[in-house]
Amino acid sequence: MATGGVNPEQPIEDLLRELAPQVLGALMRRHGQFDACEDAVQEALLAASQQWPTEGVPNRPRSWLLTVASRSLVDQWRSESARRRREETAAALESAGRDLAADPQGAADRDDTLGLLFLCCHPSLSPASQLALTLRAVGGLTTTEIAAAFLVPEATMARRISRAKQVIRSAGARFELPPESDWAGRLGVVLHVLYLVFNEGYTTSSGPGLHRADLTAEAIRLTRLLHCLLPGEGEVAGLLALMLLTDARRAARTDAGGSIVPLAEQRRELWDAPRIAEGLALVTRTLGAVPLGPYQVQAAIAAVHDEAPTAEETDWPQILALYEVLAQVAPGPMITLSRAVAQAMVHGPKAGLALLGTLDGDERMAHTHRLEAVRAHLLELAGETIAARESYLRAARMTASLPEQRYLARRAAHLRPAALPTNPAG
Image 1 (tube, rainbow, N blue to C red):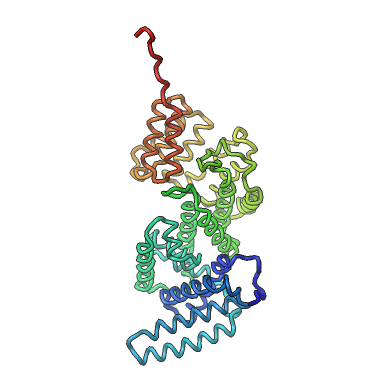
Image 2 (image 1 turned 180 degrees about the vertical axis):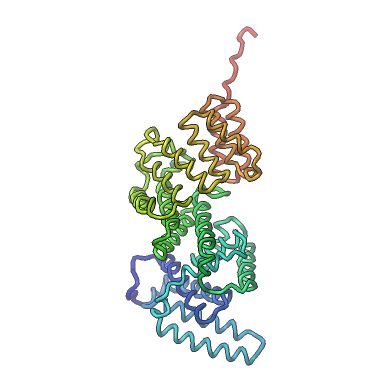
């Protein structure tokens, strides 16, 4: 089949992810029932992934997906026990499927991605469920792909997604934007979910790899789409800029053997210049033009790092000043952790260690290796090699990421005391 208006260079997987929220939104506007429509869309995506590579992408891929998804809905309702309801529903769905297939562009004139994001990030859901449902319904990822991304069995992820859809149904959540009074808080949840997806991809919490490029790419794609839908929202632009400026360094974060390369030692010519330019443009347009938020400040910090020609030329006083602002806008232990590093670079490692000490009693840091890793780094800068080595080893034991374990263990080994000379006369 010919591709018609479809970009022939676009990979099928990318096309399906782009179309997934459009098809789901079209079905939900007509039928409601998020769980049934979402299952039907997944069936259509699966069929397309199996057929299109060999048969070719249809001229109207959105129409194709809508037709297959509608037929899947028909099959679902036909399996119900109430014969009258079954027949009525099936007939209505068959008619709806024909309508949708006949007017695919009309069905997609209204972009439903924002509504789907708000629905998937419903406050009744746990953060883990929000992540999973967003990646499946809006990102178009399969349950298998989501399970692999978060290193859990597929059956576990399937149950999590199923429970999430049940919670949405029980909460009576509707496929519509929340009232203006809830807008700011709900948008914050959406941005936080996208931020978590990016972070898990950029530095995986466990497993053999340091990063998952598919997750970072998906987070950037969805945030870019959200920015197109809400161009005036400063924090959306800030989050997109932060992702671009951070992901631009990905190629330099590991060496040829897969070992971690710290920021100060990275080959900056490997950084992605177009991504940096796009991120810098977003920061420049946003800062000062809209109310300031934490993602904008973090993006500004990333911009200072990316603009430095060398590690030695990094404007650490400006970074410290930005972290002081961030501590006022969005205080938290992870901000204090990063601020301690900037403090050390400006005022010396002892000053950084003093600020770091304020986190020792914070229970929120008990389940992360970051505090010990930063402490080790600052102790090493201060020349306290024995204490630094102990902190590196503690941090290595606390992380489930194999690349981080190896990096921290190597830093500790580098600080191992030299063996005492033997006495020949002894």
